[in-house]
Length: 80
Image (cartoon, rainbow, N blue to C red):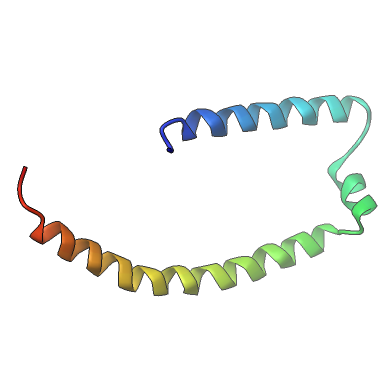
């Protein structure tokens, strides 16, 4: 499923860069586009920090269950 993940990410980054270059040639900036949506850079930063503050505890909580289970399964798996 994720065999082509790096290639896909590279293509997405390349396409984003190309679109960004075209938009900047027309004097369009990210700040202007965000302003049209009613979003400021401070709003984006606050959203990012709020998201990180929510994700980290959830990730740690999940890891406390997943890692020991994976380790137990790995130990008791028959050798190949």
